[in-house]
Image (tube, rainbow over all chains, first blue to last red; front, side):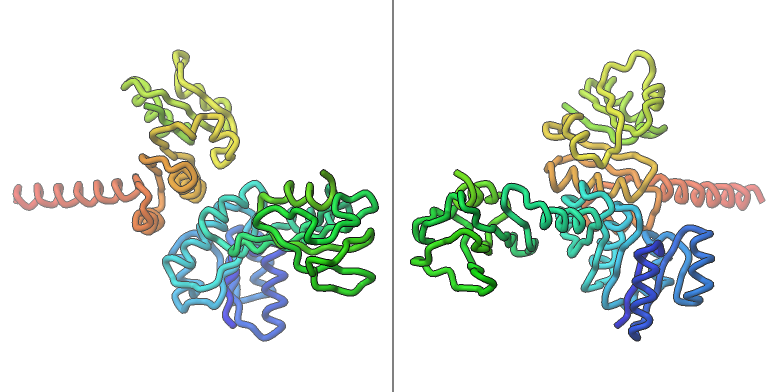
Length: 220
Length: 141
């Protein structure tokens, strides 16, 4: 595979090293002079110096081939957005991956249709939520394109759904249970299944329905 | 008519002052508080300190009921993003974005952004001046 990586910081350089080791062809672009010198000593001709939002720099780095994937991991969100837009819409690159530095900018990446995105803050928050579930609900997966998410709820003794059959639980529209994990074994959530303390419920729902779902399952 | 001007440098401040004189309700956003000085002591419009890409600040400045947005920060990529946010997120009809790089200007024009590129104007002006000078010299000989 041929990958173009914009941004040779910790993320970009480690990606490049790993990908090259697994036999992929990589071109790295780095703008800052002292950083470029360090990278050049290691990556030689595989690193180009320049601003990856300049068309001439992208073209010298080989974007016209085009690469299989363009990875925009600079420390600047606006730069990453522009790199991805140029790659996809001007040079016909089919896949882009972007780093979101400030999670507040995530909405802009969505707005411009740039996906997938990776945010360190977001990933760490997800791990923290997994350890300290907020109001009994853990976010497991976000399917952005499909506009769906998957959450996990562990049924407590005093949960709203405890002791009810699935049919009796009034799940909000736009949500449904996909699995009930009991004693480590996944069961199909049949209407007649009675929910017990300790059950782990997997639900799929439209974003924005979390509060309604929480009311139905966790607390009225 | 309400306009938000993002970036209060030489261009942004002059645009804000002119539009204000024309009777527009102008709100200016700049990351530096001292750029308020460019608007003069008599400035009666809005002035908000912060990043123009900050959604909360854009809302505070009144982007939701703005008729026009002018984006003139010193960062081309910041301008490109803010321009598209104004257009796509807030459906502002009149969005004008200043870009210094002619190549990006050309591409984003094809994407429906209304772009002013002073670099392109300068290049055209210089070439025209060279041609005019050459023509004048040729005529004199």
